[in-house]
Length: 508
Image (tube, rainbow, N blue to C red; front, top):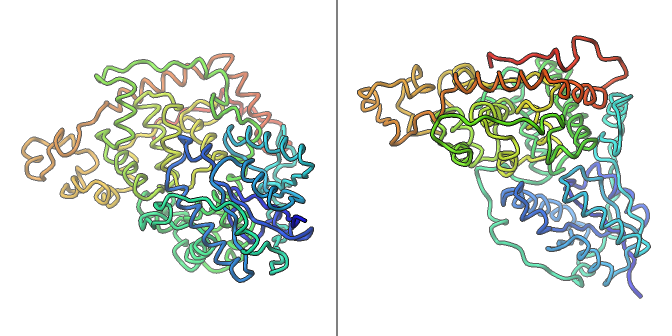
């Protein structure tokens, strides 16, 4: 007779703490934890080996905790249903438990297939809400109230024991897959995955480095220390948003912490807001959330480069604008830059290179260790200016560099070929005379490229294009639909916040 087990399907919730599906599964019987490495996602252009290494480390951390109960996560390489079939052939699956997944269209289609398989097998699949995101919600009425209720609710902690969890002896009966060795090799430039590292990172923030959070959040170098750095741990579920929120509030009353904690807490609120937006309007993965922008055509610019060549120079950090190139190199090696610099990268691609946002969205997803589909797509569209409801920011990378990295510390770290330049010219090396280039060993076009475009010209083109398109009737009408659906609260939208009256920020 087959052993009956409940299966907890881990996805982007790689932890044991505050885990409702795990709590529910253990309450109703012996439980097996299951994670599947799906070629569907491994081969997806949004993902990179850095993500699977982080997942591997996260599961290793879970296994180190489960070892005390003679258990481990069952890992399968292949199709999600095939893995469940393997489990069901050896055991009898009593129930399937997981969190709802707000992911890419491919995962949505996969989940529909899994649901059909479960129904065919007579297996009940119980899905728990992801954070404060409500599946299928068509408006934001009472959404803020719901968010507060979820964030203030007690953490859901499972009662782990030898009897509650499937033993390693039982798991050994299942098919054992092999995995790339490179996933297990630590990359010292990247944050490490797992609950342990999530807690260490959070505690180091609260022990002092986070006091400058609200001052340093926009600075590319200082933010690496002062920001929480919890984003990958939230994206892959090494810590729940609720536990993060409740933990930081404990520190709020301590001297010097009110402003940084309030600033951070507000961003945790926005975290769910954008994921909810993607959940309610997932079509934005392949089209602008404002459907009128399907007709937006970027003009060709006379820089001697095709769209493909401009895109490639942006990807390979060869734009000739130091802050843009430094951010891209930093991302390539570490998987992290702060929010302001992410917005600047998107703006440079879409506004100064006049490249459609869809051509760059998967590249940055590959580089972001904290890639979260529900945040990535709404933010990418907002920063590229195709929502019709947000202020359009055409970022000037020189101005951002001068303001946010005035001493060139970030530039020198990631662009060593410019290290000898004084602060006065490191932000604009193209202004060097031939003699100065020789003096500072910085030959434009040799060891560092000349600017590929004139941002004064392209910035004007982008502003005229986007502002003109925003005035169209179809754009305004779509903007009103978006506001009605996604603005939080029950109050009527004031005239000041109607989409057509939002302006373009020209001085960023």
